[in-house]
Amino acid sequence: MNDSIEVSQQAAREELGRFFIIADLADSAPEMFSAYIDAEWHRLLGSATYDTFCQQVVGHPVGHVTGACEGKVTWINLYHERFGTPPPEWFATATGQVDVTAYRRYLDTPTAPVITSWDCVPTTNDPDDVLTTTAPADPDFTKTPKPGLVTVS
Image 1 (tube, rainbow, N blue to C red):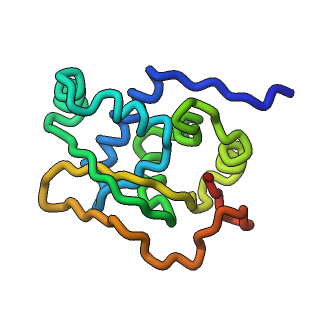
Image 2 (tube, helix red, strand yellow):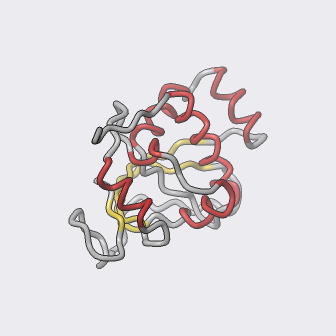
């Protein structure tokens, strides 16, 4: 059995757009836990292409705020409601290597909390932006899989 899963830059850009939509819908800034999608975000930042992309997807600029955190991904249920199952790009490294074990664990238990780390969040510069730049104490956080939790390293 082949243990690799293919990802694409085009899919990463589509997922970045979905992430921006989630940012508009969520009560607080969603956590960017995919290094692969974040790499696409960084490729676009500061370019005319990025400005156009933001306008087409959400109708306004989307900022990028760095801040290392870890814990539960708060927006995954909203993603499910709006778009269905997140694709493997959400479980990939910056170079596109999918954490196949974590992704399959997620697919097997899609309602389990996703526990991971991230280093940036979006800001839409509107009043509902709530940015967390330090990790709250989270007793559920671990890089070691627990029953009922999907961990992404």
